[in-house]
Amino acid sequence: MALTPDDVVTKQFQHVRFKEGFDPDEVDDFLDEIVVEWRKTIEENVELKAKLAAFESGEAAAPAPDAAAPVPAPVVEEPVAPAPVVENNVPTQSASIIELAQRLHDEHVAEGKSQRDKLIAEAKEQASTIVSEAEASSRAEKERLDKERTVLEGRISELREFEREYRANLRKYIEGQLTDLDSASSASGSAPVSAIGL
Image (cartoon, rainbow, N blue to C red; front, side, top):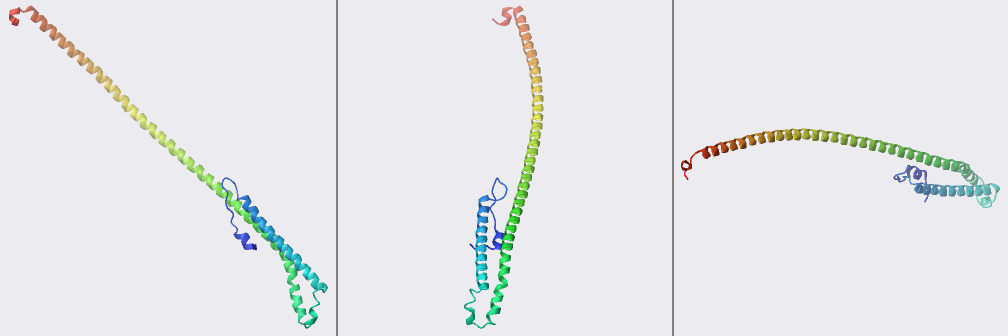
């Protein structure tokens, strides 16, 4: 794969759950790709230096006498000028790629940390809300049960009072009936049998 600076800029790493940052294996693989491309660039640079040195020493100048002298001279000088720029630019470009990769890594780590902090804050807020709602619900239920207990205790008191009054009235009624029965039996006991109709 030919690695370009745009590849480094646009590279997206997968977020890892329960850890900070990105998947270390994925980052290592990507850095390995950068190293391979960098080594290729260094090898090309060495080859170009060797060709340039061979050309400047005259090894490549043997085919040049066939062509006219003024025409090859400008053609030869034009490639010579860009060669040092390429030579100096490759390490700079590689260093800038590494710097860019490091900066992107730092940005993604910072973004991951801020996302983590945001999620933790939201979870704490949600937990606090749930706890406060549960406490409020518990207080409301306790108040409702206390009111219900008060009502039931009042009803129990009323029923006990009703029971006492009912027992007292029932006792009076039974005692009255017994008194009436005693008085009726004593009255019939003093009357003659013929008066009763026997």
